[in-house]
Length: 331
Image (cartoon, rainbow, N blue to C red; front, side, top):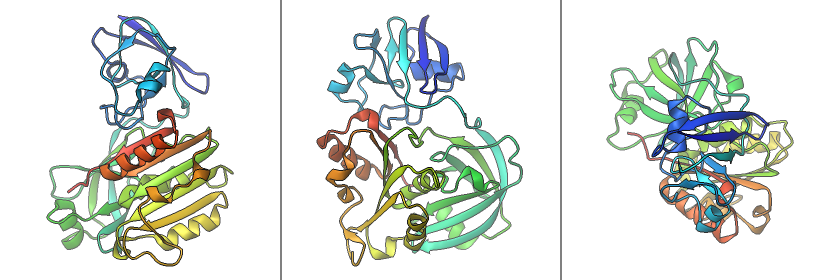
């Protein structure tokens, strides 16, 4: 068995045993070690770590890491196997840690349509003793009468518990959309599993840039709102397709007014006018955003994530400065 020494940026250290043929992320999950993971396929950047060039690591190349960055020692631990002992530096703190995923129960407190295709739900949890989450994480929701659960990012902050807010896009023919349209009512009992995922803000970044498409706005809202009063410089680039798809524009404007350090930019592919710019969320980026020390958080459909990554790479942004959550619409 090999040894991986995980060094967090708050000075904490965790020792991890890694079996031959096992990825570092698999070993961490087996040992219940606090290593961030999410997609487990080398695409999201949640599990990135740094090791010394020439360290004894091997495995599949992660899509999120360029060849140049790999040569400099950047690895995705979900794709990394060891052929010797290694020290891995992580760009996040060990403490505080979120709760372990748990089965929760709650009641639907409110449900409103924020545009023609997106609902905002407020759920009041029955019991939050010992429960918290990191802004950016998600949960699985099982509505009444449904066997399968669906994954949704949390749009509210831990300070708002026991209330949790979700943004859910309606999908034609989808079970959750049908429930929201025909049956959902305040008082409905719900079953949830939370918290899940490793998407989280980098609080050591000199500048945080959030790029969100559609309901990818949810975790970004949580991360931004949780930093109110921190003085950190933040940018939000939010894009939708048409005016009828745009939601929460007034709430975003109020949030920007309450957080002087937040630069709000909104784009529409079709029908942009006034302060709303034509184009996609990615097209809202400018040269002033590609500065050393900036970290980019991406959340939206796969096409948006791919376009954003390409733009960031073209402008010299290293993989270690890119965090993403790629989602497929839940039905």
